[in-house]
Image: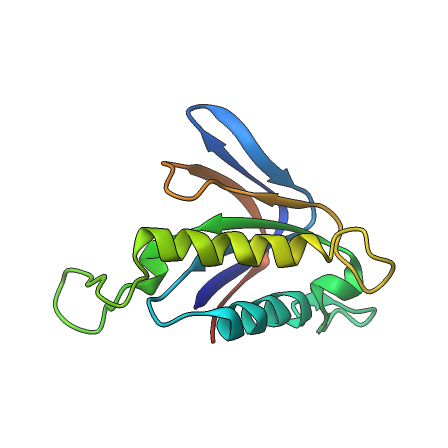
Length: 152
């Protein structure tokens, strides 16, 4: 499982001109599911997203996590993250999960993340998502910029 996280001031995802998810200060996560991913990878990715220290502390150092600051989380499915780009000039998607498997683990990730919303500290603020398999337009204001690729 691969996740591209970006610290954002705000972010939104639209489908056919309609905003289906938006967040304020927090993280935008593009989530790619690989064919070998399962429950262990989904659980570990959620832990990493919630605990990765990308938010500034009082000294301005990246020392606080999404849980620590109660930030929002926008999760957008993106199967292209599972591409193998190591050879040639065209990505190979042989390592990506088949659509039904990818959708299952994307939904499992979202449901597990939903359990973290509005939990007394540590917890996260608002959770929003894109729609699996849809043609989406994503807008964001990257804060920093701060962007990391997480793999589990």
